[in-house]
Image (cartoon, rainbow, N blue to C red):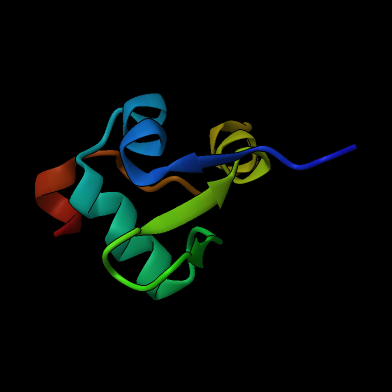
Length: 69
């Protein structure tokens, strides 16, 4: 099965956090993703990573963007 990738904005909407929080989590390694085509194209995140964070044993933090940035 082919993995589906989503943008930072899509991930932020699903996780109910600010897009900058998603970028911080990517840089910290809390969320796995790939920088496609450099900064201009941005990150792409496997949809399975969102499922992992939303699972009961996932580690999504407080979800409060102000506390994450």
